[in-house]
Image (tube, rainbow, N blue to C red; front, top):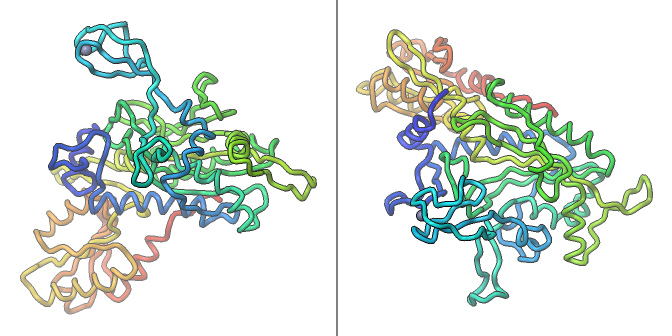
Length: 437
Ligand SMILES: [Zn+2]
């Protein structure tokens, strides 16, 4: 399997992901997505939204604020419970997670350690001009709570009947003590979360449904069968709100690790927010003529982790005519650039004009790139390395026969078709993946 350093290096060299504020020495646990990275991550989010919202008639979307009333985090349990036990070294002043060190001395200098203290992972901030306790709140550590506090507003405005879901993609922030493994664990990250509200008693069936749907999503987008698995959390691992949780895990270079958690949160959150806000968040069930608090199944995925897994999984080294070929075999839905338009000779103005004109036409429908800055062999290698599914070459014959050559990234096979047919030909190849509904 590919080493993480290889992907980190490719990501930087080819404009996918840079360390944040690097000219100042960077800042740990924060990353910037470059021109190709933003396309890739947008495509990951788009594929999620399409599968979870657009293709279903029982899920709607939401975009709630990052900063919320601080009482939200009292009710959710994050103020009291979203903590890691930390110890400090009295000698070198380094801080460690108590559950990650062995023995009773500092792993760096063997100095004496303090007793473990609870350290909250939420970033504090202040709203308004006065930095006083009353104005203090937090950057959200998860997007889920924005969904729960809008439960009644969404349900009533859209006249939704159980079972139904509310989906949201957005930034979340956690002051992790040990960020690492590239963008796997960052302090600022993006979540793709959906809360699916069901009648109590139907929760276990719907939990199984969402395990199948979400595993299918990763497989449809090309993650290798043998590098993805479903693991049920042990009772001791479960979060305070969870009745049962499964993790979708990917075999990252550091080992099996969580891509997505799919939890049965029971009615914990709606019950807490009803109590803390004093607002009735129950649902009137017309079937039974009773007010009930729905149970919730929550598939919670990380957009950055998924992006990393797709990058790692796509990375392929091949030997072609005794030369190494690096190719990102990204699913067509995820590839940052769908097609590259390449004139075979850049010193022939008619060729360049024809290629540029084709790029203008294609740009209206697809993310494409025009490139004439190197020889055709080198241009192909560049596009392979960023995962572009199709390279379209305009050559000398194209001027006479109005045909172009299209090369497939994976098979490297070429077809020659009339230039006027290229937009529809490409459209046929780039139909989005059919996800299970
Ligand atoms: Zn120390």
